[in-house]
Image 1 (cartoon, rainbow, N blue to C red):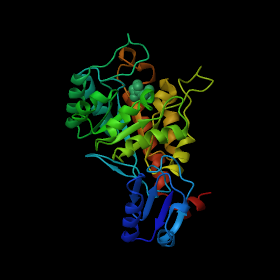
Image 2 (image 1 turned 180 degrees about the vertical axis):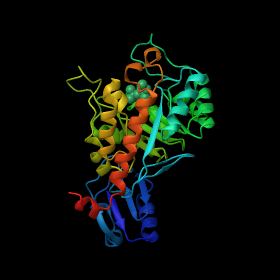
Image 3 (image 1 turned 135 degrees about the vertical axis):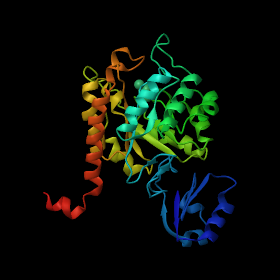
Length: 338
Ligand code: PEP
Ligand code: MN
């Protein structure tokens, strides 16, 4: 249940804490107090009369919900603002392959508007015999390349035991689709204050991903973004997954966290990455995360879906143009243009 109070009604907040704090989970956001597991009848008369509104039908992922936290979350990293009216481009190879390569890819990403460099050093491969990543050495290469170009780093952490070590190198943890419901990993990143990009699992519903985000928030880390990377449906003959563009406005309605689109893993083939990425931007995503490579035929992972530098430039130019159109055109002008 969420109790909406008048602004600055600290007395009632204190009263609610005292009344329910020992036996229930309580969260406070400005004038909104969420108390888990109670009904209106559990409130005292003074609590009831202090309430401007009582919302009983609240989602399980209450801290991530718009009803609890109406304004957009904006995540601030050293070089990026993610969420709200900002648009954030993230790019890099699927895997960190060598120091020279990640440095070249950082230059390409930065030159085309990316402020976040991606690259996996711990790779969740479908087969145990595929390239598993360079590990901590890869993280060192990634960090140095990002620093050279004044960029942030996003990289996957696969294991709760690695959270501390990966956290020394990264600005944003990526939780991969395969780990979206790895609850001990979610709790471990939730105990840090490093932003988290939580990727929707390939068979996860909207509520599944929101509940997964709540595990992170429950630990105290509210710097969460949710990434759509395509879900498995009945037809994967032409694309690797089905990109759910509809999830962008749906998530934006339900949660205050920024929504990011990963068109690369959705498409699976280079030629479809740009149109899907642009569709994500048009749907209102706060950013894209895109795989790029200058020699995809020899990439150590996901070469078939990598954009060449010139292809990434095209995607990025168009993505920023669409975003400008969406955010800068005043409503009257949009109306007049029809
Ligand atoms: C990746 O980002 O390279 C990756 C493996 O992503 P996902 O978890 O979405 O498959
Ligand atoms: Mn990949």
